[in-house]
Figure 1 (cartoon, rainbow, N blue to C red):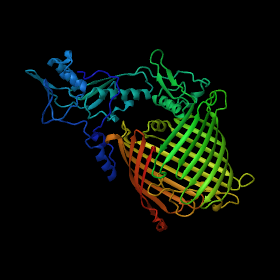
Figure 2 (spheres, rainbow, N blue to C red; figure 1 turned 90 degrees about the vertical axis):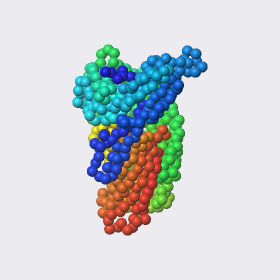
Figure 3 (spheres, rainbow, N blue to C red; figure 1 turned 180 degrees about the vertical axis):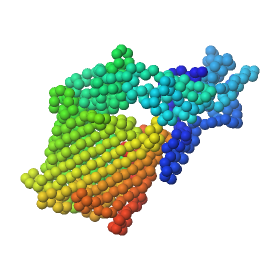
Figure 4 (cartoon, one colour; figure 1 turned 45 degrees about the horizontal axis):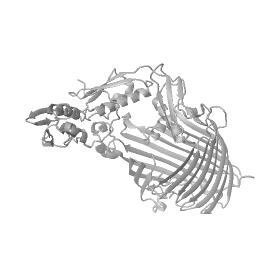
Length: 611
């Protein structure tokens, strides 16, 4: 017996009881058990109301519903059940017609076995108990969809909205597997709570052609460099979404989207684009407990030339850091290419507790950005010129360095995709950087620096949507003074510190080390376990632990270990991601006594951080 027909409206996602799904995610630690208890809490949507004590709710003189809580009928539903006084043709609703409407309204809420009784001029309704979704079965079975990991609808009322959610999930998974034009229909059994998903996969797609709109002032094909896919690749809906988000994030266009053309031969993708004006002025303001406030203003021309080169000028203002940055990405080849020249000029003032410095830096480097093996990469190498003036603290009053810089950055497609969704949960990113200068005509300091950092996220148990997200992040950096250069000759930007929301969250901002303007070597590793899709208002509690070491010599770490456990809360609010963290710093080693003044309880709040 069919409970509902296929729907196209967007489902409404509310609170959910995920006790059974969360039980699978319990880990051995006591803290995770406590979080599992939160995950299993009854949040009031999918409730087994067998044995309820019925009470009468009189909707109007002609309709009485026997139930112990309000079913929240809308004003429109009440008019269809009770009529509209003063409107002649709708003043009275025949009871059989009211019964017909009531069956539909109850089915939309998951009540598929109501009882009706007409007494005189009154319709009495007993809704019964809601049918809950007990299982989801694919017809035919498709192991690649991993339907056993799709926990969301289980335990929720069998409603058209829930069936639509299941259809959208199946269509999305099939799109990732290369079947963008699959036909998906659902049928729910109101007696058993089983949902059958009937699937006709259709053709397996290889992308043959992309039909796109021309962009004013830009040569054809120039924006293909933003695509995460090529013609000849197997269709993957996530790669199309990433490609659209890259273009929007670059602000080359206002909006764009890719969609499969399901009529005709398979393999044709259509790209629809709203170009907008090439110039954009932006302004924003934010807050965090370290910088107190953050103001940013910018101007960008994202279609500077027919090759869609980009010029960007921005100014950032906070209490410890003020910066003016101009960048120009010049795509110099007259044909579509991933090669470009990365140039920038930066004026910066840093005002920290242990030092104050002003600097000017300019760089010019050939660069390449592209996709390979599921990774978006960006690599560059070239000269830069730095002038840095230390006004307070350890460091030279006038440092001048001509350096050769090398950088490579990458992120997996999954990490990129979920970052665009403001819901990081899987994948990785990394950055590598090296710079060297030699004391001579253009430099009065010799130094070589190396740095690396990474982030890795896992969706534990591969549940859909995710419940447990575990992540680690780390960094390592070192500076080696060169010819005729010692520690005191190095400017503050060549030294390192720990402490704050970026690394050691149990210590104050750049509180480590407690002496000098920084260390020559630092290492950091942090971990975080976050609970998602379990609490109301999309609140996401998490626990974390950080470890770090410093070294006063190049490439050598001192034995003192800094570590900080803590708890936090993440909320994807309408104005951005809010994070609140509470951590405590600890020090292990023979020199721990000298750090007692900074190993304390720390609280951080921020807007915009993802992980």
